[in-house]
Image (cartoon, rainbow, N blue to C red; front, top):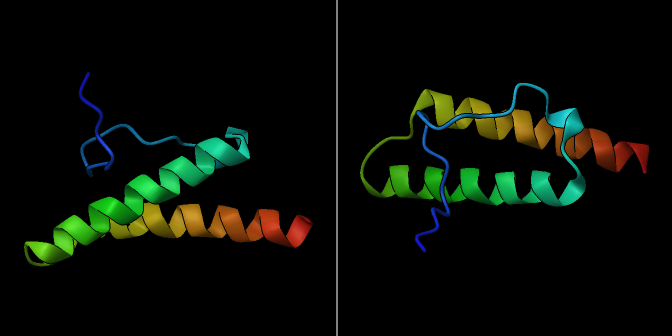
Length: 67
């Protein structure tokens, strides 16, 4: 079984992050960070990857503020 630990800009991405449970959001965060690191290693990051990571960070911050 092959597992992809990154989420490329071409991969599907949830439209509404609020429907994800905490574990799903953390996994998405990890996959987005791994993709960003891979993109930096080969040059410059894709704007889509940066935008997705920002969306995930905003949702994580929102959840932290809610307690």
